[in-house]
Structure formats: structure tokens, C-alpha cells
Amino acid sequence: MLVKKDLWWSPTPEQPLRTHISGVFDEVICADIPLEANDIIDRYELTGMCVFPYTNERLYLCSLYNKSVDPYKDLVFNRSLPKEYSLAIKIISGGTDAKQRKEILNTYFTDSTELNFK
Image 1: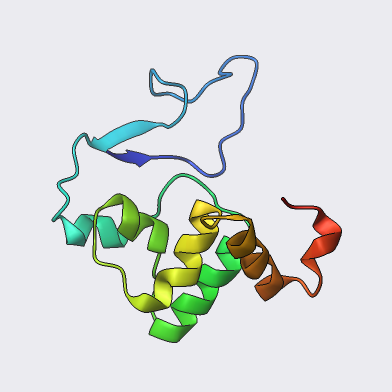
Image 2: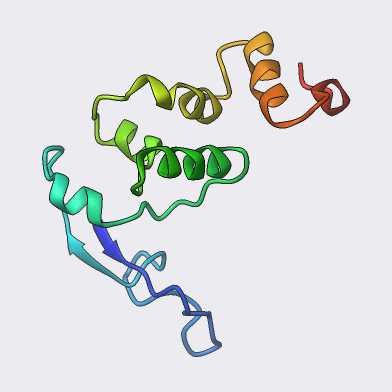
């Protein structure tokens, strides 16, 4: 669903939760987004925040395509994924095995053995 979330809102004693009954966002704009509603999907961000290294990879892809792209959103909405998204998808999934996780970490860190990933 498409929801509105005030980024500057903060809890107060009078209003410890957001205005929507869920307490997570402010209001529902569209209760059911069809998978083919690209005009809606492309205009908005997902509410979840990702962290480094995914954010770094997403910024690289935005630069590569010269527009805002989000491999995770494309995955969620069952869109086709270009081969350039492969590293982002590996990061999202944590790789498929220890060797692949180490390769992902080596992309961003010089020596991932210090991190003790298994």
C-alpha cells in the first residue's frame, strides 16, 4: 500500500504514536498498489531504510542509470532486474553462501576476514 509518513514527526506525551491506527505511518493514500502501476511505484520510496553497503550500491546504480533506481523495490514489485543489479541483489540476500558473502564484503572492505563472518 502507498502510505504518507511525516518525516519530521516525533512522539510527544500527548501523541506517542503516529495518527494512523497502526501507529507506524500517518495515513493510507492507496490501499492496494497493482504490480503494473509503474507511475505510482516510480514516484515514491519504500518506507524501510537500507544501510551500507546496499545504499552505496544503490547510489552507484542511480549514477549509472542517471535516475533514481531501487533494486529492492523492483524485486518487491516483481519487475525484471538488469544484470547490473546483481551485486545489489546479492547484498540484499546476504549472498548464497559464506564464499559469496566474503566476495561481497571484499568489494567494500579490504580485508573481510577481520569481521569474522562464517
